[in-house]
Image 1 (cartoon, rainbow, N blue to C red):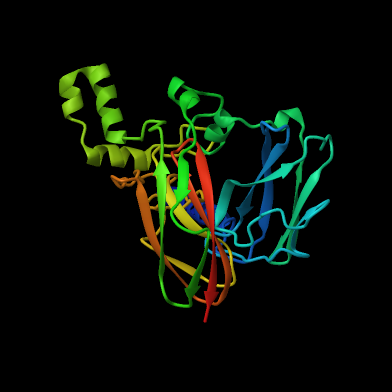
Image 2: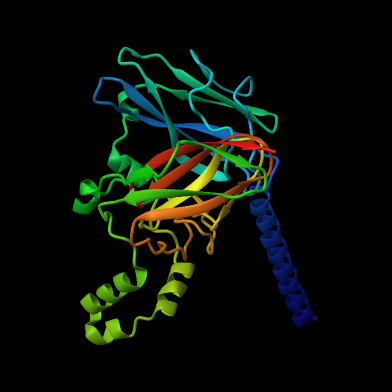
Amino acid sequence: MKMRSTFTDNAVVKAFALLLVVAVSQSVVAQTYRSGQHVEPAFEGWRPNEDGTFNMMFGYMNENWEEEPDVEVGEENYFSPGEADRGQPTHFLPRRNRFTFEVTVPADWGDRELVWTLKANGEERKAYATLRQDYLVDNMVIASETGSLGAGTSSPESRANIPPIVMVQGDEIRSARVGEPISIETLVEDDGLPNPTDPVEEARRFAEFAGGGLAAALVTPEAVMQLRLTSPPIKVTVDKVNGLYYSWNKYRGPGDVTFDPPQVKVWEDTRTSANSPWGALWLPPALPEDGIHAVTMSFSEPGEYILWGRADDGGLYQDAYVTVNVAE
């Protein structure tokens, strides 16, 4: 009877532990959503311009993993004081999007606040921007916040890095018809910094340093990928793979835009196999020899679209925009 009692007690404990694990797992799952959640506007900081004006930098956190809300400029998407339309997006990609756009304010802005109000899925949120000194942003802050560097760290190459140069070929305003693809070519130039991430080569160099040539020879791509999958994060910020890419996305417009080939995600998709610099297995794409990045796109509905192109070398970025007027 005593043995049976002990067995029963152990079974009860194990069952309780299992229920606790399930409950915790369900609780964690419940904190992430595919759709139906709000979008949180974010003030990222400010930086000075050579003419004495200032650029206030904004991004956002779309709490959804799949839904991409469209919120037109107006009562649910506006800036104050002054002009309601300050070039903000009306189409919101999933999850965290940092340093998405900038708003220039005059040299005499002083201690006033610029407020971005955004209402998505019935919930209104505000971002308050000021020129307080502790919000000053430089290139090292951008690289750190986006995950290229660890928080509070830098290196000679990161300090020498400059943003890519982006030159869209052709007109900035174009015409298209619903369902008929158009092509856009963009010349992207970069200084090659920071050095593109090569996890296999990095592991081999470390192995050779620690154990010599034989240890380095034992490092395989499969082993490195497995280690990246199973290792916990080593940064207090997000972890990003360095390497140049160029990506187009819908910024404003009434319908869907389909890109071919599929574009690298500019939002922080941290899932393992995501086509995103924040994904554990992502590697920088091969770059065209002539520097020309070509993409075709088609539109589901008529209207005016603004497309947003971003060149990102891992640490810094440069943006370009094209307007497309789409007819039936």
